Amino acid sequence: VQLQASGGGLVQAGGSLRLSCAASGSIVNAGAMGWYRQAPGKQRELVASITSGGSTNYADSVKGRFTISGDNAKYTVYLQMNSLKPEDTAVYYCNAQIVTVAFLAWNTYWGQGTLVTVSS
Image 1: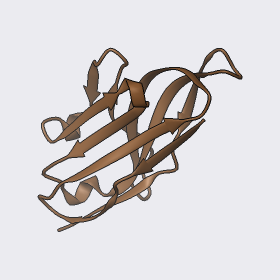
Image 2 (image 1 turned 180 degrees about the horizontal axis):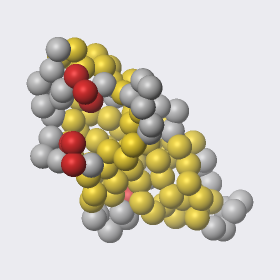
Image 3 (image 1 turned 90 degrees about the horizontal axis):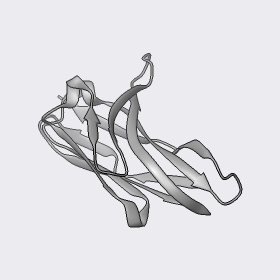
Image 4 (image 1 turned 60 degrees about the vertical axis):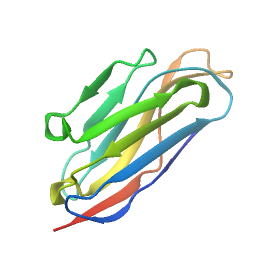
């Protein structure tokens, strides 16, 4: 299974970006998917997650500014980021709970990360 993340880049404060992450491979089923981020010198933290049923969860720091959504048929998760702040600067990683043909059990997979830089 591979998770391919895209959409990062450089944006000014107050701007918007949309991240995408698509899972591919011998997938039997996908459950919750989410986005984490890691800023320089800091631990990786949860930004937002979404279950296969559409329930969402957000870090307090992004509530009202970020929106997570998913396409179950495409095993894809999106993160719409609005009103970006310099403190949102980080490498963003997607994460998914997936059952594969090879291992008929839930496992956690990570994408390669995409850099988001917000200038002041």
